[in-house]
Image (cartoon, rainbow, N blue to C red; front, side, top):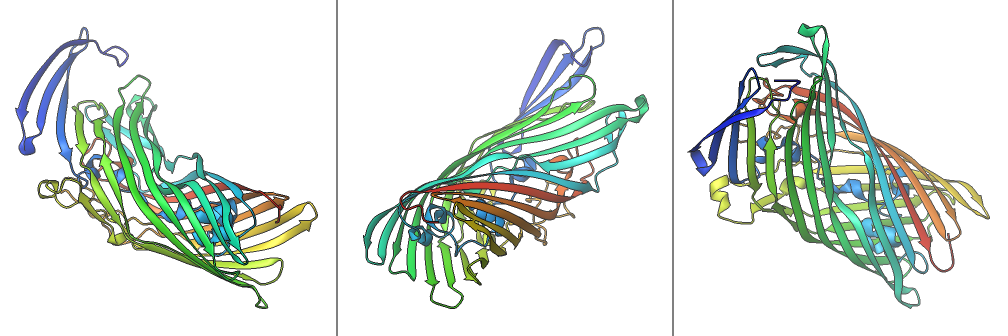
Length: 510
């Protein structure tokens, strides 16, 4: 080879059948000019494969949260630790409890977006990696972080449709992020090739993902009187996940990268029901609110899967093609309740409780006959129960506007099981993530708003921390990048900044 780039001279291929009807193609490439080197190439056509097999083909698509409590809109809500059910008003309430849409005068427009960054400390990673036929490289650094970026959260509008005395009917229309599905991540490990005078080697795993389950929703809210109101969202769900993972090695010469890609499509329908009661005549006014989302089904249709393994010295390149079988995900009901207590005209205290029994999620293949061939699909999820508390203080009130400050805290258990540290092999067909411990976390937040005339600007900041275990380079035991089944412990921090704005048409009442 010259400078890591060979010249193709000869190719031969043998075909034969293997168990399950897959076609295995073994090819050898004769590469080189003066000195030829045979590189074995194995191509596998999986045909249609099941959800359980996804754990061995792409563990990261299984090992991820699917909790939808983290996508609710509002910089002000984030600053309060997510304790916002009873405070949500106007079009923003669509993402919390649709009963709150009736609060306020006239129509409103609302926009929301957020940005996140991740950092962390990793321990337990291998101190050396053996390269077949080339010796060992020694670790000098290792990091594994979620990749950030700006994301839209919600666009919504509301307007009164009918009024009579204290009763009123309000309608709304919104687009919003309903469930996060994309969690791009980057793993970088720096090595020193000790046998060549400290020659540096960098191995990178870059997981690029885009997508979410999104909701387009008409909303109706009805206020019976100033004390009690109800509402409903009709969420038409759609979305995609596009995942592409590149495994690159930088050793001073161009080396073909490993590549893996798959896409999924989501469709479904879900309703959100809400109720709100306000007791304004008490010495300390109290508001309580609730949201209930009945069980619903998301249809998931798999796209084409492609895997091209990293070309390692002395090892064959593995090429895998297949198509993930389409399946239906029956998601159990969830609910949230919350309260707001106005201790004084300047100080308000809020608290929420959210519950989603994700462990009751059931999967079934769209083609019922596949279950006998591929086994019943399983998703190792855990129930999520969160407690959110917060406080708001009106720091400044002038003729030109108000400046409230906020602080909050929430418990943040994750909806996925811990990695089973006693079994990190995908060869036995299990899902790898059936450990007994749930990933636990906590989040602290703060924020502020500027409310002036017809416009409100809200800013919130949150830092979420939790500990988890990851497969080394997201690879099960037996692969080139994790031959010993190593598990890495990661202390992760995720920092979120959320910004929202509301424009109130009409009186400009704050």
